[in-house]
Length: 311
Image (cartoon, rainbow, N blue to C red):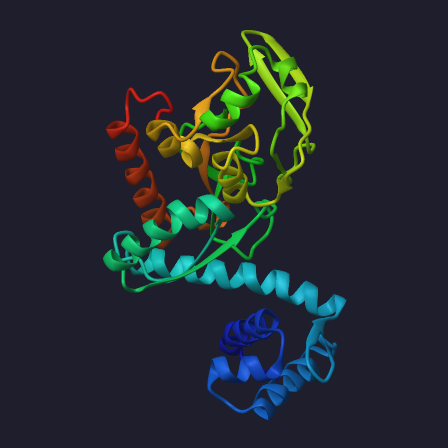
């Protein structure tokens, strides 16, 4: 029978094995042999009296019992790590693993450079950045901090607003010279609109408001993509009108390579938030990282005050 002190190490081992997806990859991470990983798993399963993984020649997959074990193990490990940080000192230097999620274009252009700066200040924090088209669900325990657009998902997470943001409609001067500028939202039906297939919103449906009135327009165009950066590049090349967050188009509006259209109409807000689970509210590394992001965005907002785009 195992001692209580062996439980956390077993949970950490199994969590690593599930993340790596194979015995060989786990062995490389632990710097042990593949048979040693297989033996340790077999000992765990024998102690628990349950099969945790389905084995194949190349990969492993979780059994229902394995999924249950992994869910609780990750939560317990996070609680233990945060408890140890709190006990050590509330003002101790941030350290440990920090898993960050952000959207593709914004994460690449803005969050990745900030992580570089944060890493220089806090060398004891190991940071993993994953970029995805859509933000993970609020109950996904694979991430510690998510940077996302729009309202926080629900009360299961803590959220801090990093910066105000809005989506703008814009097109290149060449496109507008050829096709003219829309004057009211319905005019968009006569234009080539560049579609972005991402997020939970209905594809090709643009909602624009003026005062209390909101108009819904079904737009069309020959080009669509799941990558916002590509969509902006198509707009720069004169292929049509794009709706994109001001953070992604501000520099092009300032330089004149893009022009805003329908300036008097507003799209739904897309404020930038940092979101993290309730269990990390005392985590020094999470708190330090969110403070670092907030400080940067606040300075950016102050420097850019008065610009047409706000950034």
